[in-house]
Image 1 (tube, one colour):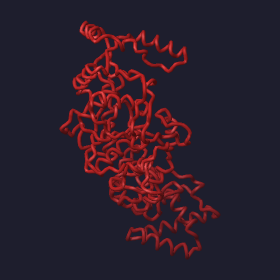
Image 2 (cartoon, rainbow, N blue to C red):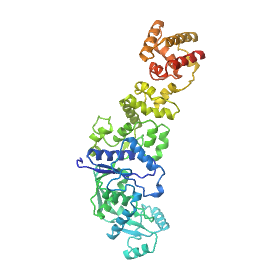
Image 3 (spheres, rainbow, N blue to C red):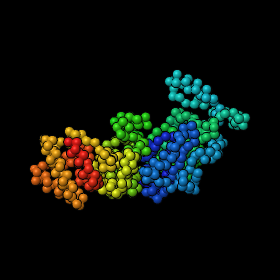
Image 4 (cartoon, helix red, strand yellow):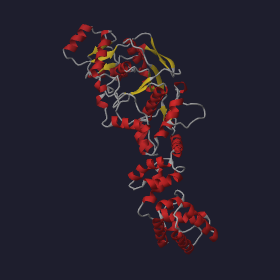
Length: 492
């Protein structure tokens, strides 16, 4: 299965909704195998189903791919020799090949009305038969069909599937798959409005765009014999087929679908790429996570950058077994990739989350805190909850929480007043200097860090958990640190 010659792989989504994990994985694998072999990755927008198009979906798709770091060699905005790359701009091309199939007696005009088709479907369901077209127009003479078309009678074009024998589809991941022709339907290739359906449009485009490998979800397996037959009917060389594993729900029970997205959002997760970006996940982590849902390099290596994957990915290591979506693994990868970021890079990435939350967070201040929070946060958004107090004009306190544990109110006031004097006496406002001053004071007073530093943390932040105290004081600055301690002492 190892591929050496340059691959032309395409990602061909329909802009009918949000970009989900399955689409991201397909795009990633297409990108990796193309880049690894020195080939081309093509983005093609399959927008012939005009009724299902969602406004803004194409823009979100393009933005999601850019966010993931998956760029294309040919496609919208990057015209190549085989464009246009939107199927809505290729209508006449599909009609030409539909007519060729009719001339070869591999397809035919069908004039059945929606009412008749509905009646046939109901009759089949009543007889407990799988619904399919009954072939009513299959045996019309070409002369009669052409005359009815010329007269303007509404019609579709159907593929004339064989009804005897078997069709064998070769899949790189699953081997040879045999289908009984008796089970094949006469699928519609061109609708009554003249728009080609996926079954024809994708095949024509894959041929004309010289696609060598088609990587897609296993939901396309039932129609793969039809696609195989269309390729043969047109006399074209088929691409290599790869049907990927299905995604299972996090429980491992049942196939994952878009309908479960609402339930996931209650736990702070999502299967949609735009949501994962908004939740504070890194594109590097999402790529790492998705790559391993259906592929592995070996039995122990887990951390990969996109460049690593270009070097190490191979179709040989794909696994057809269903893959459960494990969000704990995503959290793990996100923590690891956050730790791998430089401090300035991390600061730049968390800044938009502070701005979105309404805080004016200076990049310079964020750079000061990134070294001490990168080991403590799971998502970029966590940094806001942990550090928002640094950028607030005022904070509120729980009066009882300010009293040092096992100390009286008077003792707390005394230790707090001494701390205020120490802060006012510090001339070099740096974490190491502050820490040395307070360490000496605690030793002299017989206080533990849990006692005094917890009090100071509560006083300057209003919360029990923060990044390291003295780094926080540095970001707050001397004036604001002193002001907050004074306010806490007044409250006590």
